[in-house]
Length: 207
Image 1: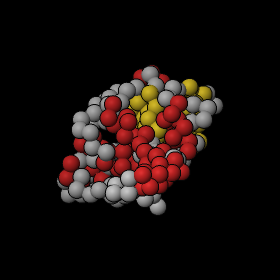
Image 2 (image 1 turned 45 degrees about the horizontal axis):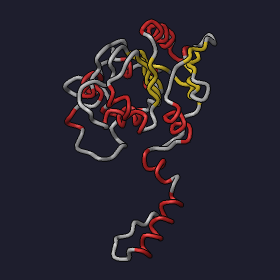
Image 3 (image 1 turned 180 degrees about the horizontal axis):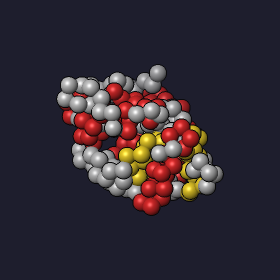
Image 4 (image 1 turned 135 degrees about the vertical axis):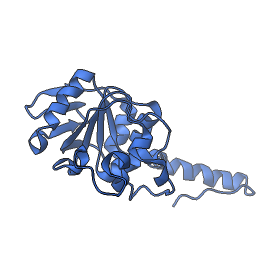
């Protein structure tokens, strides 16, 4: 998982509430277990017409938002099913940070597990950031995770809260497996000792 330290990126404003995971990635694209290749289908029903052509009014189909690294929405982002494909699709599109007044719990947790930083901010601040984002390339936002601030184009800094452990894992680029492998030495020592004491047990080898 890539480390998240400081992100300066174009932000895409999507002023809608209750964007569920089926809107983020429709169920028909959930057949894959790979994390790559889903970005083209992110917000499929909102981005494309039935014939596959792009809807020109949808924000991610417009320049410069095709290259957005930040997404700003209204309340309850990621509600609906628990599909982890939703953050996979956002990440594959290029989104590393999502900002909203509130998130569905499972989606919120899945974002952290996949290297996306979800930031909760009051509705009025989200609206102000959307106004910044509508400036396009001139309205880039900076998200400084170490300092826990979102920096607006005019230099104003907006503080946000984050769990210290989740902050550490993002800064270090550690998913659940990476976090476990930090203890590789202790795990190997334990398995070696158990192998001597109980040789009939199956050993776990960490490569």
